[in-house]
Length: 203
Ligand code: MG
Image (spheres, protein in one colour):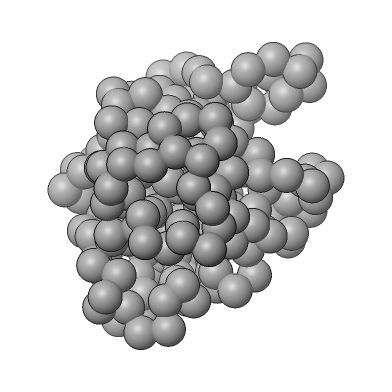
């Protein structure tokens, strides 16, 4: 099972971190040890002083495929959830400045938190999904997948040119603007409408 992530997939978020708008999807991966499920807490890693949440729609792949054409890509998604692409921003900034890979800033244990899955057949207006991220009950991110720079179909098609997709693989599709730091004791929540899909305490 593989965990893919797309970076800079909302223009306003790329801007808030002073990144250029990409002309192709920015793809990175997290190891399976990064997965955090079932509303388990994330223990604040000792190696960072600036842990950030990034709330994202997460796609679950429902069948194997490679070199998938965009027009067929939707058929490869069987469910979605919301998740947090946790990021050690201080470490990432240092690595980015040197042009180095950022795995240790993005792929550490617990950095890929996912919520409960919803079959896509249950989502009205799929692939248009509006979602909100709350920190301690206050809304910090409003996401709308209609604002994605690269659509779900484009992402799946693009990734599958390089990597065979397997049933159960996950794709974090990028975060909207409003990312920020968390502290021990904070509780992050992400929901679609009134449906809370994930709640993640920071301990
Ligand atoms: Mg992200």
